[in-house]
Image (cartoon, rainbow, N blue to C red; front, side, top):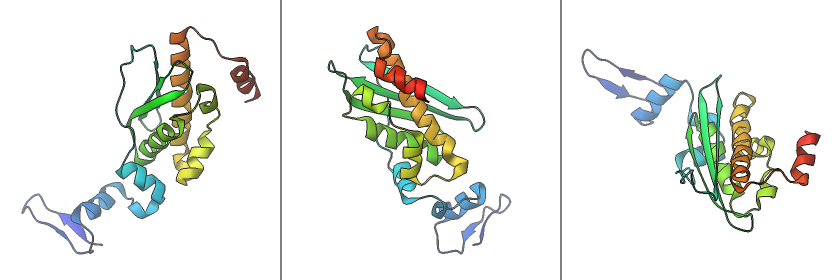
Length: 173
């Protein structure tokens, strides 16, 4: 690959057969898209459920989590119906492609499920689905934490404590 940019003469060229943007991205980040599994690339290129809900809505739970070491911040929200089923979810994430993909997958997986059931989603399930390398596992951990935080926030708005089932799960981990 040969890519270069010159401020002095305004010349930008690529001779690799890839687009200039691809070459420059590789130079700047040191990473090619081939380093990521196709599921990560798919959810990064076409993230599902990006957006936000009104956090003051009593049927909306908001989870805001971050990883200080890498600077990733993830906001995941759920909208829950009267029967305790998640009818919609959305996210906003500031972070790497793996963090965005983890958020996108999480919102897809929790839609249509009872609140109690989404508490069983583990970061290892998300990481496996996305084939995340060990250095990116914190991204799937953030997604799991965001789901739990959103459910906790929704329960607090409902005046509900944790169910005995959730208390037993928390005690076993």
